[in-house]
Image (cartoon, rainbow, N blue to C red; front, side, top):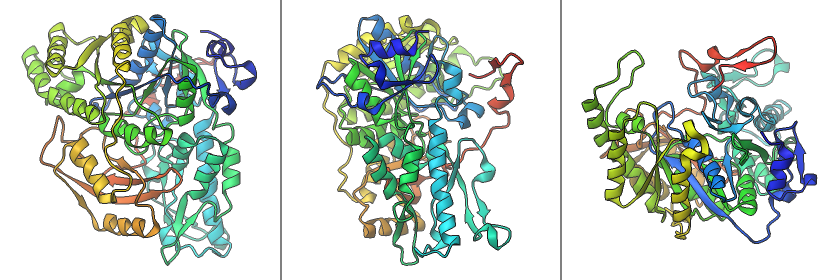
Length: 547
């Protein structure tokens, strides 16, 4: 590994503008982030097909492309989200890449890095505490305690905290009311941290957070509670992007950790802006498929940041395509026959087709990356390559997990070629459209559904959103990542389905409206055998089992 001061120096950042956390990681001062000399690099978005529960290597690919570009003599950085401890100890494990395509120091990145997620959680929970304290101290703002919509947060999968009651005990213990927890990655404070362009913007956004309503349905905000200043103070250092490196010494920005199925699903604006101002290519990954993190990047992040996406990579795996073709992979079973796998692969290509169409809908011609797994055969890879050629879409086989940057060189060359074509992004909808119209376009155009059904609570929320003047905000969809629909059992490319909007929430600080589809939850639970069972610390301080 290269010292973090050398990594910063290679990016043209003065040593006075970085704040080291040991030898391998550092914070970057905001002055360096917004030091714009007018030269903007290319922005490359990495998205994916609809994944299996284990993921298909999107982060691995984003890291690999950045390393390969540097091997080809191009100056590149990679921007990825900070892993949440929930998935780290849950199903998917860490989110710092894998094999020879990682960001380092991997264990520290996966476990807590520089404490940004902790800071977001502390700022959020301070606000929640001030809400209950205000009600306890006389409720001058006249909260309707049944309409307090700010839940507390914790960076852990814990289904037992989804619905709770606070204030139990005696008179000095608060006012009893129903409450709950969401995972920190779903916190609006995390979204605010990722979308803010500096401390003044941070304070404005924090102050707009709606924490509840009066009995007359008037919103009560963090500013009303006089909580904004203290929250901003907690987030002061967390606002600064974290600089680390890949396994091959390529600069990497790890900043912000919003989930892709609930929140924005991408890293902070400040980390992306830093990359664009200090490199030729900035590689950004967005959570899950083009229907979630991809759509949100095009419709929210890039429009707030003023970015144009120059190239989009869609990561596909043979495993995912065969899964969406109906093939089930059970650890207890032997490998399915070649005929079964090939039949499922051909059917699963429908899912890839829809994700290609989605990216093209935004005015970009994608590059397909086949992320190679050891079980993939040449015949299977050939099917996907031939299919992409028939659609006129570039395709590349990546072995970056096994071979690092060398295994991603062909994909990097195709990224360079695509980036030179200067695609102009096309928004899916106008912000001035109605809430129903915006949701309808996402469902019918991006998901491929027939219609949208709004439950009574959702209809009531739309009326309130219109009354309060928030209907011109973009939509952040919260839905399952395992299907293009809102039902995780509908694999492949489902057709003829209706999406159900159960409720909507105003995220005025982040600047969007959250639409909850299907049975999505914002506090995940642990699986029967959580990854935490495999993690150990030996007597010498070495950690094992963390992947």
